Length: 618
Image (cartoon, rainbow, N blue to C red; front, side, top):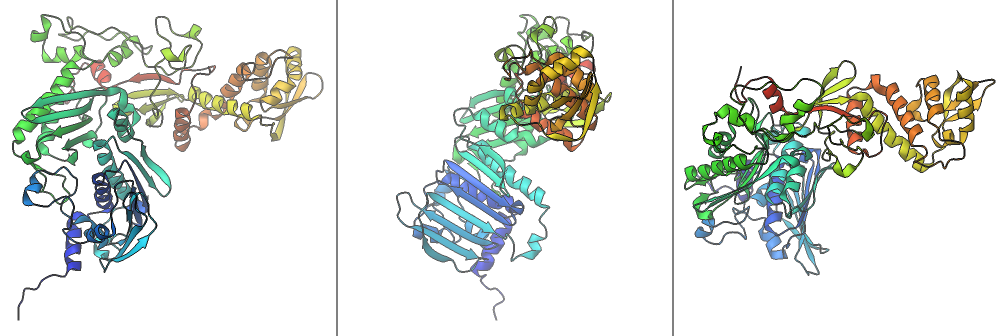
């Protein structure tokens, strides 16, 4: 009796699934790659339970006819290869014809598709690698594939899955890699009905896609890279040394628009940045290597994330030269002196190239004296000074002398505004002096927030919205009576209508005593006497138009007192919620205390203050 037997197709597919379908992220990657190969302009990914419950990928690509829809679930059936030579001239993501049958063998699989202009669509259902059920369906544009209960019939593999949040992170990262490679395609990812990643087509400016994928803080630091050598073309963007990460998660390299991990390329990147990075920091790069497909073998890894170059050293040298050229010519470099360019020591050259923004922020900052001169840098050509990055909204009259208006100050077009998502990207580290919140900003930047000013800004936005909605005063559970001076009591009684527009209700209570019966929710528990005394000075004259302009000063008073009341309760989740409010806040309207970010110092500036060359270890 023969001891060798031919494996069944079902078992062959499940074995293939062990290589192709490692986790939900593998399914997402394979399906999205198919959508890209189909010429899709918009791709939507919907996930449930980290992808283990359900994965749905829909696109607006060319779709399939009934015969192709049936064939795509047969092993090694593909539209991307015809001959052996095609394997060496690939311009598509997929080519083996293993992904769909492997995925269908370990899930409940549904495919809906139709060719453009078709009157009838096709639906294919497969459960656990069983016989496909093919039926007609309503036509739609492109293809929708739904994968449910992944690994339900291979429990041994399913138990090796990580937590839902971990699997979700891997799935989102799989989409981000493909989105970075194809900025001209719109990507939308959601989990449990909540949007995770939303990025319309950014073909006109790939930096928008990079900012959407890696965070808005990276956008102002991106520098273009371009180098061409002997058939190898390197393009893309690097972030300035001012923006770094504590790990290598910001390194993205693509070969012919395929994300790959290669030690040689990573080594070339590290060599180019070694003089510019502080110890323990990693660069942020998104680089594309375009070359003749015959000079690179993509068929060496099950997930196609590794390649083999015909000339690995040449590719690495080109990549290194591309980054080095961008670093030398980048805008943060000061103009070199004619005689110092060739003779300046490495340490002096590094500090001379410091970014204009972060070189002079600490020089001009109110927290210390000018920086001491470093040995060997006396002759270094430094760029002209700029202002410290202060996100404020105060009257220009109180701006510090010699400084340009800060964010939200005077004329917004002259101000340095934080990028979208700036505050939400901050990582709170602790509280200083029971007033200032110390945070880590994008790229390792040290950011110090004034808690009172941050709360005041958020509450002012709330009060302005309430004024626009014309919300009536809400009676308080416990009223308060306040003894005031005659002028104060008279001003408040005459201004009862204005107070009502602000959400407060006061009534005479005999003599110069007033009863405070209603306040906005944010002011419940605030010091009633201090609040009314401040409002008595801020209310507009009787007969004034009760609009946002006339009530601007009392609104600022309300915001300040609401912030004073809540300041001591700001921690944990409340602080994170406040940062989210600040991202949505309008900084143009002035506050009584407008400086929210009182200090912002990049990591390299702290290294400079430490008088220790960047990159050295203690």
